Amino acid sequence: MITQKQSSAKQASIIAMTTALYVIFFFLSYSVTLPNFTLLYLPIILLGVFPMWFGWSGLVGAMLGGFIGGAFVEGLGFLGVFESVVALIIYLINWALIPQKAAEDGNKLNLFAMLGVLTVSLLAGTSYIIWQYTILPQLFTASQALVILVPTFLINLPIVLITCPLLIRSVSPKLRTWGMYSGNFAEWRSRRNTKPI
Image (tube, rainbow, N blue to C red; front, side, top):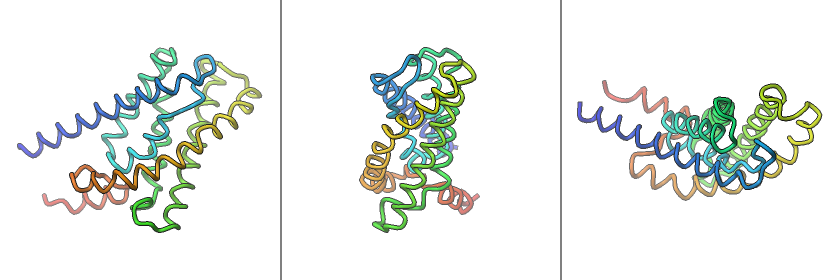
């Protein structure tokens, strides 16, 4: 019973911390914007590392942070839910597809696979949110969306490709030591299946 309470407390702490960090990064991103749309998307850094570090708890925190950022930082109100969907898309792609210990073991093939996954997830998330904003609320027309997509993607790509591998390589070993490391989805699932009942 005590272990379950500690586990619940740990999950709640991770959710609170990841939500707060996501909102802070979202606020910092808002310095480079179009009206109601953030071009520089610093939470992409968190979406590249939180899946490996915090698993489901990190996903909940990222989605809450995305909603708060969209609702209050971008001023979209309840439509901030679209930012939660972006967090969900990017997070799940990264968590499912980044190879185990991708940036930690020095294996160049794993590192390149990780960089490829980060690129795909960023493109998917960016494409979704820009497409969404051609419908509700209609911030852009379809032709404007295409013009915005490329620079938005290119502004954020180097940030994620440089920062995420460095953070994973330097912070993950400590998190493993502290028992806070989730690993990719396959690692998380195998650990859950081998836990004693």
